[in-house]
Length: 89
Image (cartoon, rainbow, N blue to C red; front, side, top):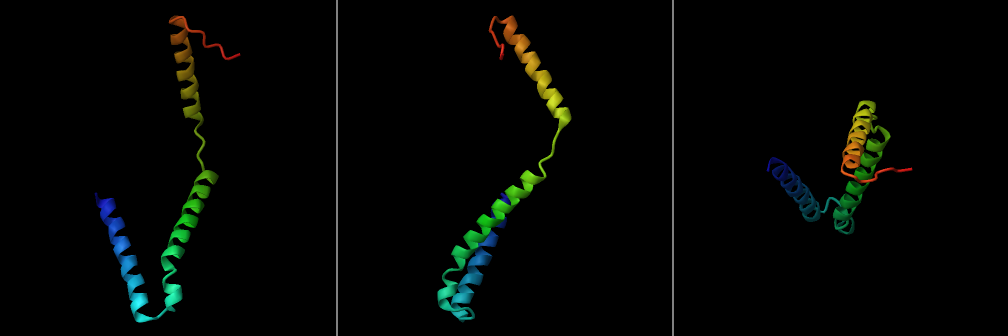
């Protein structure tokens, strides 16, 4: 619930700044109407950047790999006991 309040507060703040720019004529009216579009494009670029950074620094977990291989072996043994062929050759 707190996260929703933060997002709504941010949206209200951005909307107030945008309406203020439209009313005060600090920025040309033709540019001020495009600010929401620029904001959406900027948020998209930020999202892509964060995904790229996350992929570059993706952690490797060798201990988790060993646990996963152990779980796979246990599952194969269980299925073999039930009479299901799980040979992946």
